[in-house]
Length: 100
Image (cartoon, rainbow, N blue to C red; front, side, top):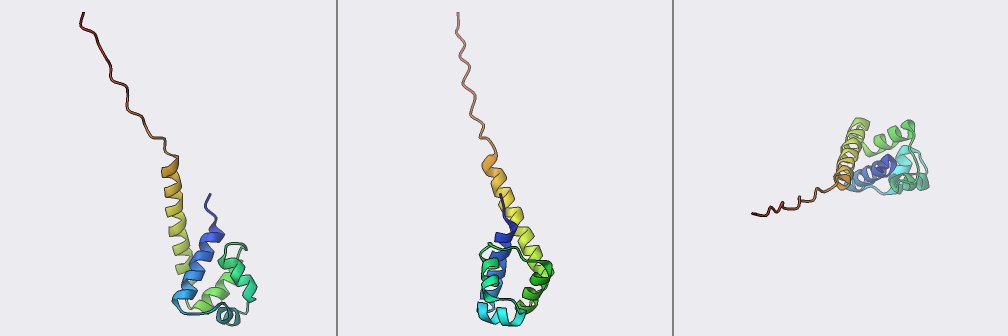
């Protein structure tokens, strides 16, 4: 099962690191505790819409971009999971006829 909170955390961490920001810097800009942001990035806590908006503002990225990336990654994980569940067809045994 795909956990949206894990994917969201991965996206937020990636964006923070791409911008060269520390958790402390994002924490100060978003006015959210460093520990809570860390738990969100690790997929351990759910982010409210207000908190997510604050984090996006601190990262200077539109919320819609974050949600779009999360949605795309969830779709990829769902597709991969569906491929794993597809049963593999076994070839039919050859039919042997006798010439009598």
